[in-house]
Length: 258
Ligand code: NAI
Image (cartoon, rainbow, N blue to C red):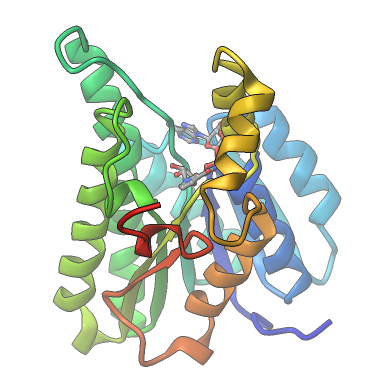
């Protein structure tokens, strides 16, 4: 195994499940010191215990990304225990799908709070240190929902469009000070959240088959595939890529007509 993140400290939010866990595992294998943040503290503890080595520590921090003060404290604790944060991966997110007319204010606010304000909280927590060191790589996990509209998924696409806007605007804002901010927009990736959505469909097996069939590559994505894209963007290999978004959906979003 190569060590593309050797000597780097990375903070990963939403690390207890799905894509965030896959990123944590890959980053650990690539030599990063890690702080795993998630609202699910127990699952985070279990993953951190598995990835921790004396020479390459892995820290678990229970945190809600919507709590700006807690995010600042987590970054302070990470930097005290692991060294300066070089990388932030904003992966924590939730599916919020409602009929626009009956959507409650609480559900709208929760959708924006976790999927959009959460990444901003993470960025504002790491930025002062990154700016002082003139070095930092931030990757936001956005979605194809940030590019195309799938009927019946409101208001999740609003937040993901906003997250791509956040990536572009802040990427430009801090580019001259050594900070890169990029995003990844996955299509359907088989994670616990995706499985829960499939299970909520009237015929989960048929829906899974339909999802496979509409993709040019005829298969659903895997969390590790998103992790490899995040790894590239977070590494110095991508040092001239900034304020960009990489769509990874097996080519689906290029189709106009089936
Ligand atoms: P998941 O539900 O398996 O994992 C999400 C993790 O985020 C969980 O561990 C959860 O506890 C954590 N989390 C949720 N709210 C939080 C909060 N307020 N504070 C801290 N942690 C919180 O979901 P999955 O599928 O791995 O999604 C990860 C990211 O990828 C999300 O941002 C999602 O929107 C995005 N995404 C997922 C796709 C998919 O098909 N699975 C496709 C495109 C984007």
